Image (cartoon, rainbow, N blue to C red; front, top):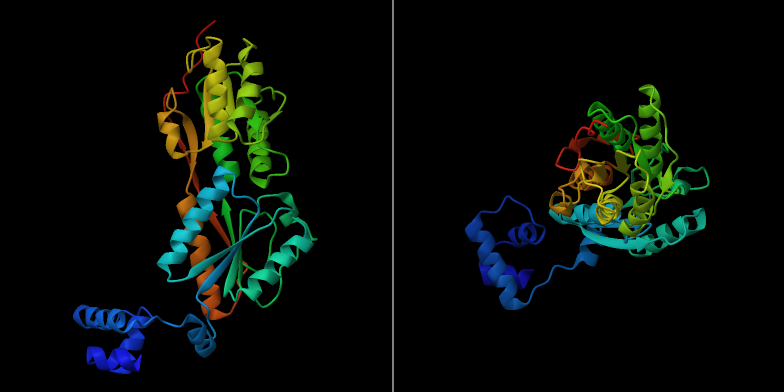
Length: 329
């Protein structure tokens, strides 16, 4: 840093401000310091800086799977928000969602010297008492109905499923069939229960639940069964990918969407507007989830005080061309 200061003709304190990303340096001086850093080959030593101020500027993420759309989009949002805060990210996957696996992930993250951890595990095990979060490390949990002494970022899954079901009923459909996500998924369970409660509150029959695995293939498999039943006029799939499989199954047997069958998905993935027909779906903001999670964790890191707060991220029904009133029979 002394070499950079001499090269740029500034004080060591100014070099420190630039190296730490502070804003109280004018643009010309900042550029002069950065040029000097490049000429002398200076790189900030994050390890030394961490020893000095007790902060590593690194956030750990414990995640159950990278394969599902929701997890991958949420992780992408977290990574962007972490970068905006000037932190790095360390990712730890947990193949089995037990206390031992989660504790092991925390232990490995501690070895990586992280300032805090975001947990993104959708399975029910995180809601059970066997999962204990370690004391002394800032933690934020995403999508869980458990209550920890840490912030929880919770998406309005139930409200989204209710709005999808009500939309189909208000169009005039007698009932709504549902293709649910896997039973171990917390989000899938909330969407299923909300669909059922909405039908019951409206005094409508509740059809048997069809269980998928979030994939378009499982939606197609169940869609074949639904397509063969002429009494089916409305389907709510628990995610857009399964809805895509349903659309294919209906098209293959000549059942028109939305004339013969209306279809609604959940997630509002970028491709949903380009399905044929464009898919009515429930939008959930993964960007907001990631931003709230990182902001809550950075705040907890800064203050050292965990807060048992629930941050609710709303959903919104996006109506496109895959839903319409049923044809009179």
